[in-house]
Image 1: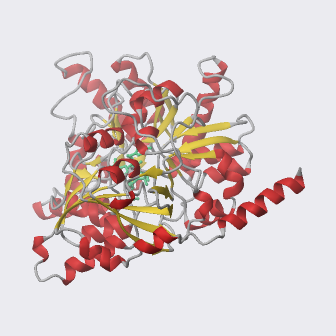
Image 2: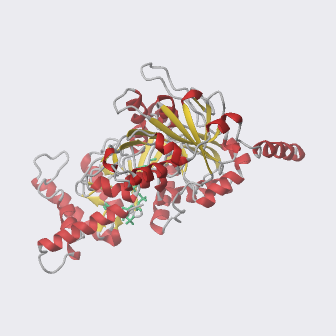
Length: 544
Ligand code: COA
């Protein structure tokens, strides 16, 4: 058996090391600069990429350079559709070109975020499950060019993707012209990881995924080969941010969460074999998976999610990952190298799907997911803001968090109880923007504790959140607000004092802190207020 496996591995690797430059690819080879010259000045680009993974890395830079060299840069105008946020070589360079007019559906690049918050780039923050349908129905302007990263292309139009499955299955068939970045940093063994399937728009036909490892599509996107106008060779890793080790608060959140899940198993509400997990982006999500890996009470885990980060390796190393279905592998450079090195073994444990399928409400509801996403802030009734600092400044976008939360078997929101060294309480009287409303949010957890909001009235939810989740430095303040609201509220179902509901945010904007004890002794002058507002804007703009 040992001998056989090694023989298979050896022959597989021989196949993989063959040159991938077939005669079709050879006939299409171009430089990034030549491709950039072919784009119309007013262009709608559909690009691969979902998180800083699988996005084109050289053509956008060449196009930005063409704009810079132009005598009339003002003639250029770019609409950019991607899967989600992408790397600097796409979102960053096009934002800095000054000619980006529209970006959908998600972003997290600091330069792009700044322009959006200055009102200079139009950004439409969308549920990711809606994007493919909107594009295919022609609600957005049609796609002139698709730029997609691939690891192989065949003469009959099969495009084998890298980590680029995000929206490629939608953009490639719709684009007038297709340009491929053939990235040789990815081994040919990537072929076979994908399951590409696009549901028809108007039929009620089910998407036949019952289990996380079901396959219903093809390992490639098929296009008319005549539409492939150029192929550019690259050899570059995704510029994912380095893997940040989870902090203490994240581990505490993770432990509360795991205790809750095991208690649900005890009560028979979650099967002993558990349910598949969806896990959002960031520090806390990483900590949850790291804790599951270390906790002997968890034996075997399945993921049905849109993003997988380096923390998956903890599950692999502890032999607990049964299967992971995702849209993107957002690994650090070490993670990317390890994934490629172990691809032969890992292939039987992963599927990469288009985001239309990963985020599809029908599939999420049918599989029955435990969803775990992060809030920027939540209010005492359980409404969650994941996107807008001070109700007006875009952080990243709703991404898939709405798709997963609304359709989850159990929806969980996590957040450290305070931000910015305690100047911001993550729990406030009323959120300044609502992404996930009280009807969809079932469990709230901070490092302080966990509040199970299911089958609770608004007033019971408020009591639970205040007692379980709020940081001690804000607990009395929030209790005071809740009691005061019950005294003065117009209605008693969800009591609020509308005059005070956003007073914490106003205090933050004016003084730099939500806590009254942090206030400067003197009344702030208009200059102080301006400075404080700028500070908060800068903070939001420099994130990620
Ligand atoms: N007001 C202002 N700033 C706040 C804040 C608040 N209520 N709460 C947190 N912040 C700041 C933090 O201080 C931090 O700032 P820094 O980068 O300057 O240190 C920043 O916001 C991000 O917070 P962090 O604790 O690092 O969170 P994160 O990396 O886990 O991201 C979200 C949290 C909410 C921004 C992120 O999860 C997100 O974009 N979610 C929406 C999309 C989503 O859920 N996608 C996944 C679906 S699969």
